Image (cartoon, rainbow, N blue to C red; front, side):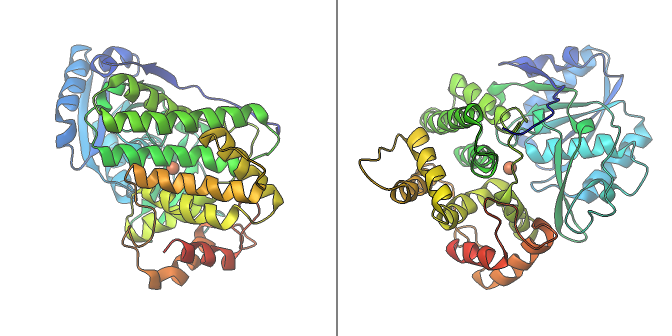
Length: 401
Ligand SMILES: [Fe+2]
């Protein structure tokens, strides 16, 4: 366990039906809100009507910005910031999944940001000029997809549509002011989106478990518990999508997976996300699918790299899948652990290869170049345990075919 500072000020209102009362929950934040959602929001029409009615009932005016898309774009953040300034908006409400919530954070901070908005986002290329925002309008999140935990963390990821670079900013002012987490909103989520979101949440746990401080047993047990919960609840949801109890358990597990609690003291890098962001930026691949690709290939590449990796993957398999050693070596159990994850992704219908994601194999060298440029340290290595150079990245991508 390493030294850490934990600060998470998000007021979470969790429960079925709470989104219908959002106006009351946010009534102290101001008199006019920007509601942010997807370009295709037919799916949320009833929810949006309920939110608008609740705001009106509590004397809160609103303007709407419905242009966000998966892998959200900087151009839309810019446009919404101008709308906020013109309409003198007091706070922003994000209604959707991670793309909407991340955009909402960037918009709310962007309204008060004095420089070009791209400079908010820390990335490999812009690191020298990036300056994280120091103030933001209040934000309200109403998540409709358990996945990113954006409703309870201070991270926003956006793609620069001019350079196709996907970059993030993580800074305390981006913590949502209020998150109304209503699991009943997820009961009509299609199986595919539910499963892809769950794999993203699993990846958040796995990144820290595998790459963070390796002497934090309490954090380990919390990670394992969240993984077991996500997998068992996903299986139950796929059998009965309308069971709100399973939806609630999934939602809370996904929120806890990346809200900072279980990452505290681990100081973990996120190699699968660094590589995954490149695939999303180049091919608009869904975020969860990019993580599935690397849960497969990165795991197979790293699980037997050294004795410590073998022991870690073997422990993970014992705790999460109940694997028994029966006299076998760490190496053998570690390999079985990875197969269990791959089998699970097949079981729940999440594609986990470049081929399945329609990413051309002939682009592997170019993808590796982008990963080195955008996801690696200044020494050209991917932060991971152990660090991985360009040769290793190319091997992983070839194993991902
Ligand atoms: Fe993620």
